[in-house]
Length: 287
Image (tube, rainbow, N blue to C red; front, side, top):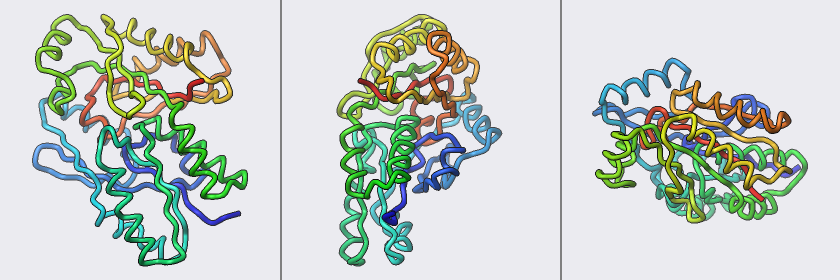
C-alpha cells in the first residue's frame, strides 16, 4: 500500500474512534478569547469545550486566525523529510484563506524535497462535513487506493457534501460580517432561527427560517431525507454545547431510518467562534 497520511485541520469535527482507527492527523489552528491566544492541536475535552462556550455566553470575544504558509512548512517538514506523502482536506476556501496558504506551502515543500508529494483538497466544507470526507478518504486508503486516485475521488465527492444548520443567535455571524445587524436583531427578538447551508462555493447561505429549536431541528431532518445518498448512510450531527437540541435531530432521523449511523460531536472553537453556542448542524453526502 502506498505510504501517505490523511490530514485535516482543526476546523474539522470527527468522531474520536475514527481518528484512532485510521490515524488521521491534524494541522493546528489558533483561536483567541479576548486577548488570550490558544493553539488548538487536538480535540478539547468536554469540560474545555463547555468553558469555551460559556465564555461566549458571558460576552467574551472569540476570534480565529488562519494558518500561514510558514506554519504549514514548519509543521509538515518532518513528514516531507521522511518522504511520507500527504492528502490534506482543508477548511472551505469560501470561509477562510487556509486552502491558498496550503497550496503555497505545498509548492515550497515539494521544491525542497523531491520525493515528497502533497495533494490539497478544498473541502468546500467545515466541521462534521470535513469529518465525513476524512472518513471516506481513510476507507479509500485502507482499500488500497493511491494518493492521486484518492485526491481525484475526494475532489469529486466534495461537491455532494451537504451542511444543514441553524444558529441560536445571529450576533456571532454578524460580528464576522456574514449577516447584517438588522437581521440579527430581528431574529433574536422573534426567536427566529435561520436555516442555513454551505453552498457550492463553500460559503454560508440562508435558505429559510423557523421559530424555535424543535421546528428548526425538523427542517434539518427534512433537508437530509430530501437530498441524501443512501449509499453513504453515516452522518454527522454537530452542536455548539447544545446536546439536547442535537439529540432531537438524532431522534427524528432514527424514527424514520434506524439504520443511519450517526456521529455526534461538539463544534470546535475554530468554527464555534463564528457560529456561537446553540448551533446545530447536520452533515451528509447527497445524491
